[in-house]
Image: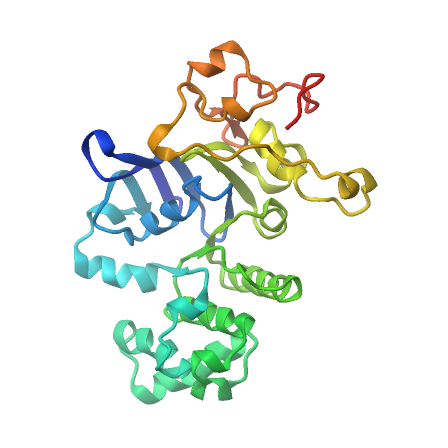
Length: 328
C-alpha cells in the first residue's frame, strides 16, 4: 500500500459560472520513504495541491476526488481524526517561517505544543524533546528560549522542520521551504531535509519552482501546468531528458555546470501560465508551445505511458530540439 494516494483531485474556488479551477484531476502516489517533487511556475496549482493534502484550504475551495493517507481518505475524516492526522500522520513545512511562527512565543514553547497536545507528553518531557528536535536540525538547545525575530531566516526554517518532525509523522509536505533564503543556506536546509527523511524513512512531498533542486533531493518529479500534472517520472530523467515541452523549458531555464552554452544563454519560456479563470481550449500549454500542432488547440491531453514515466503530450517522443525558427 502506498503511503499517499491522490486520486482525480479537483480543487475549484467559488461556484457557478465564475468558479475558478485551480487543480484539475491530479493523480499522484508516494510510497513510504519516497521523496516526490512537484514543480511548476507560480499559478500552476502547486500550493493549492499541497494545502489540499491536509485539508487546509479556505471554505471557498470546493474539493473533489480522494486523498488517501495510509489508506484513510483525508477528505472524509471527522474533525477530531483530521486534527490528529495533521501532526502524527502528516505535517507541513510552510514557506516563510516568520509568518508561520508565533512572534510573541518562545521557540521551545512552539515546538513543545504539539508534543503536549498530540503525544500527551508532560511539560518536562516536552521541553526535553523540543531540545532534542532542535539538535536534530542543527540548532543548540539554548535557542529554545529565543523568539522568532532573534533567529536568522535559515534558523527559523530549521525550527519549522523541527516542529514538523515533533510527532514522528509518516509524511512531510514542504511547500517551497527555502524561499527567500540565500543559496548557501538553501543548500544546507535541503541537505538537512534529505538527511532527515532518509534517516526516519519519511515520505516527502516537496514543492518548488526550481527543477534542479527537486532533481537533487527527490526520487520522482511531477511537473504541473494550469492545474494538471503534465509529466511525472524519475527525478533525474525528468530533469535531464524531459519529454513534455513544458518540462523541457523548466529544465533549460537553469544553467548547467560544465555546459558553457547553457551558462551563457539559458533558455526561458515566453509568456505566462494561463489565468485559471480563462483556460484556453485543448491543451492549456499549446499557446506557448514550440511544437504545437492543430489538434493541440482543441484536444485536451492526459497522462499516458507506463507507471514509471507518464507524459500528457501528443508528441512525447519527439526530438528535444524545437522546429526551426521556433523557440521555447
